[in-house]
Image (cartoon, rainbow, N blue to C red; front, side):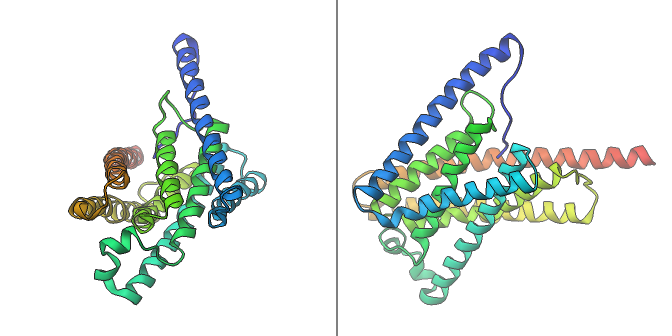
Length: 290
């Protein structure tokens, strides 16, 4: 997902700046309320199993400090590098959890409704907590350095929705495995962040074998790890709708997946535009040297 640096000059820019400031206040307030809620659950309700959320937040904050002090002080580069670290850890964790369940229970049993809603696979709860901590850190970092654009920034909305959905699931210990399945998309996020870091490092030769391989893997993981996997999860929710108990679990799950699928369409369009721009740049470069 694209991240701008926000802000602008002139009269119109001042209006946008004021709207972005109000958006920043809103999202920072929701982040603080979320943090208070998590600390309340841990300290007063004795929910020690939620501690990995705090560990995740400070782990990625520490990674931010290391990159900022030893690699680059550019806020966007630092943020993208830490996001790459999160995507790598999360995708590896999710793949390991799924392979373990596949080996122990087989595909049919691991995708049963009761398994996905009521049971929690080993290490799935901790992995979700850790990711939750990352999204809180990333929201804070983007707000601190204004790594967003628009007065309703889609990236901040995305993180807020994820924090609400993940945290409610963690509090109630329901649909943990469903949410782990959604995180398989982090395989594609790895390639997205690699592309951003590569371009910020000045490697932009669209004709090189490394860049071509990167684009191949980018499209491959987008289609299978993000687009198709999220559609299949949505189809599974719809097919199993009668098996859900009455309440907000199913509506929240369906609305969350609808939002994810919509974001995936926009992301795919942005990816296609970026691919065409790089291809055009490569052709212009070759024409210039002919």
